[in-house]
Length: 154
Image (tube, rainbow, N blue to C red; front, top):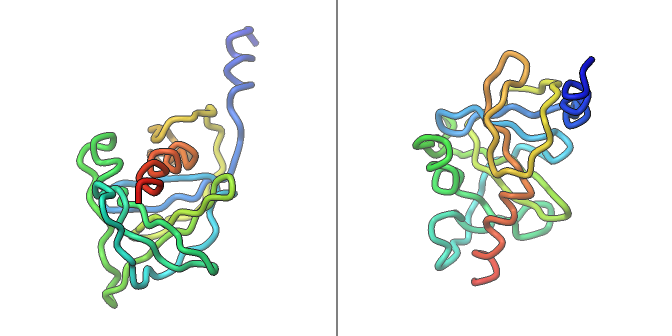
């Protein structure tokens, strides 16, 4: 094995990822950051958030920001559309957590879990191959940072 191959292998970590669909896009995040899938209930709107936040919703005894993925990531993911309602008219949300901060992501469906080795990144979105699936890997740290300024201004 060459030194470049060793360096490349050292930067990759094998991890389990949760695959889910939001709009037409297949997205993923490490399962260690996923807490639960739940129906999105009544949202409390937030003023002056520039559309990146849909509002706040109560989850696990806290007010949790609900991220508008299509607005926040649309330019990165080629016109990403928002999640659609379930047959009963409700919307689903994926409750996730990074460094003690919780977020709710509107989703259409959970596809499943896949184990894969992906190079570590701090990017908001990283297109990657996870097993048989091509997905956009979300960087929850970068996503939290992207909306933090909007929450502080409210």
